[in-house]
Length: 120
Image 1: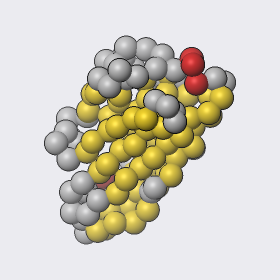
Image 2: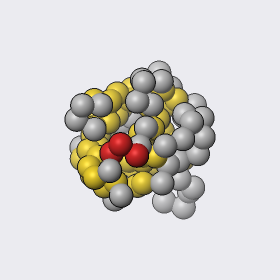
Image 3: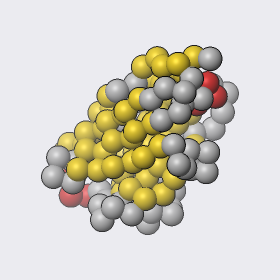
Image 4: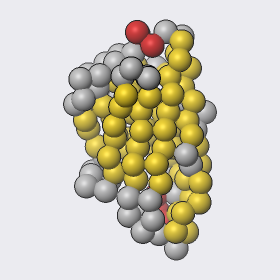
């Protein structure tokens, strides 16, 4: 089993920045891809960004150019730097991990989620 713990959510004004972090523990040798998904009220969960152990990345279309995902393999952590945030990006952001291709669906492990609220 893998446990994922997120941190860094909060309230920010439109145009502002936040940095999310996620720490993995447990059977971390069983995961390769780590990433972030988000779910706004009344909407489906959607991809934000994913990163492989080798550093390959994949971004959702709406965040490309504003968000940056990074990873520290030695510490089993993944970070999401979010810039120029928009009110419509208010959502619960979930850390995700698994062993699959970067272009595949989400992995098996999910964090509890962290709330990001962007005020207009």
